[in-house]
Length: 170
Image (cartoon, rainbow, N blue to C red; front, side, top):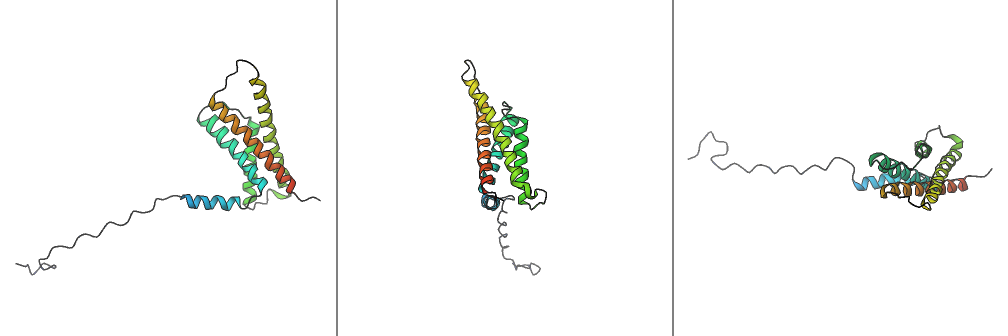
């Protein structure tokens, strides 16, 4: 028997609609991150790329990861940290089109990278002197920080050299 007040006429109700598809996770995909990084690096010269890579290596691996987060030995000087941050800030200002950097951009970049390279070289020389001293033991964490510091200083020095070479001569 059908009920005259039933809008379906006594038939079974249709199945519910399927749930909506899951939303994409909010955030940045690896393709978007890769495109952003390649967009930035395409605007950098080779010297700036090496100087920035060296500064990032010193700041992120040697200082932030090893010395700060993992409480390992702080193998770099405060001057090296300031020089690394200065290199990154200077490059960021230039990429942003800031007029603060001006005509002396290359000179300032080379000076900051030179400071980083010199402090890393001094650290390497002290390490070599300490290695030949019997009874000196270094932890793996300390060695990771030192290697990142030395490689970062070397990259910054190479970048500064490339940037200095590419500067127009008057």
